[in-house]
Image 1: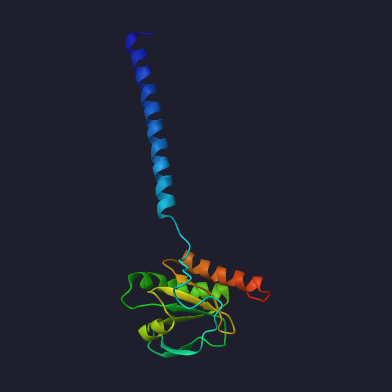
Image 2: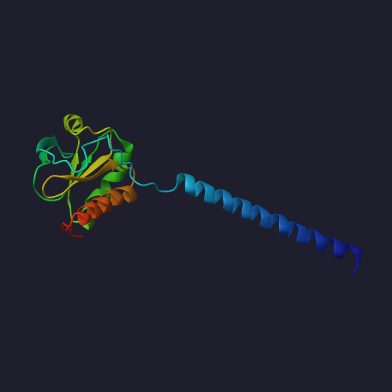
Length: 169
């Protein structure tokens, strides 16, 4: 074997090891970014929004289509979504709300009403509250995507289940 073949062979293996190290380093960076930017659960803060376990009185509110709706009080299981027409995250979340509500077996009410937000101590939009048949708050939180919305609905289902009540899927 001549000298230049041996040099080329050694250089090839050195480059292969360098490329392997670069791939491992990039994979580590992607993993770090995924952990940092990956999906998070909905932000459920105890002192924001209505109190968990509290029965909400019927409140008239302005729905996203301009009609008047009643939120709170006894009735069907409800997902009340406080939204704002100027909120870009709300606009992105809007198409997923009906499907998520149907899958969870709840009625969805999208509300664009600053007065109702103040009455229910909503910190900002998009904010969701899940009510059972008695109008009791089972879950609440700030959501930014479909996964968080589904997480809130799952949390409500789990909380009702722990109390021995039925929550249909």
